[in-house]
Image (tube, rainbow, N blue to C red):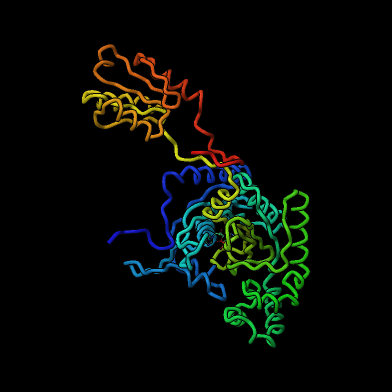
Length: 437
Ligand code: HAM
């Protein structure tokens, strides 16, 4: 049997690694400047951590999608389907509520959901996640949304589409759910099966239906934003006003529905037209009450996450030039057995400054140059008996074809000048036609 990666998982190959690194680097920069520190939490947690957060979702979608298992000690553990619950668990466990508020934390890594696999939807995927914990001010909501937009822009994305809405407080949601139940009761038979089920368990989620007939039935109804109570309405207006003041582009979505149920007040999503049906790059919202639910003090918070795979897909669609795999500056070719050890030692020394690779067996010049070419090196450095006799090397520039004999002691300086003449492309993404690399 040929072994392969599990359905819904994939390998990030060397060619793709620099894009990931560039995205994480620009993210760390933007968030760091805003005072957001990085935190790494475990990939798995006690099942309760998620039961008390995402598992509360009335339609249980996320809970059904969780990878939960019993370990040998009889503990029930879950691979995180998202970061918020684990980050808040750590926030409580380490008493971060005693730190100056708000506590701002970001993370990146894999998350796991047993979903139906399609473009942009995997079973192991990766998120960048950001939480601003310990503030009720609408400014914090606006800051969270602005940071998401800034992070995606710093990654090189132009076409992000931000939707902001509010799901209200607990009472508003109750009221809206009751309204929906009543308004849809006479037409319940006409709803799709999924929506009928949602109407029973969590009416709000009906708004999320992809079914055209459902949407037609919903068109004449009031949206959650129309029925907000005064507190949620005032909060929402303040968020909107701050975003306008800061020139953050967004549109109001009066019927925003998030897949997770812990949201209160502000909820938002960022979409991109170029990545197919799963067009959400990221999303988030306020989760007042969640810290208390997880056993901590009653501390409010807001946060978001974006999917790394979807953002890279969107960058690809926008033809943003992203860094490719690094290639060696020099490839050292041993022309005889003795040179094999010599080039290995030489490479070790040169690696203090450059990416240098070498052959591990003696080659004739033709094959050695082909090896250097396949490695993608800018220059090949050849060493054999003749070069040993007078402590030289032969250096061939693989782009121009120019070849010269060079004293061994002059090699380091020569490589420095090659590097200077054509530095490795900066890892920051640039807009424009994709580079040939
Ligand atoms: P979410 O909307 O469930 O929110 O996920 C955020 C993003 O993760 C999505 O917009 C999408 O880009 C990506 N994503 C989700 N599921 C998959 C999947 N199966 N395959 C590929 N990408 C996926 C949350 O996870 C919340 N914890 C965000 C948050 C943080 N809210 C407050 N703080």
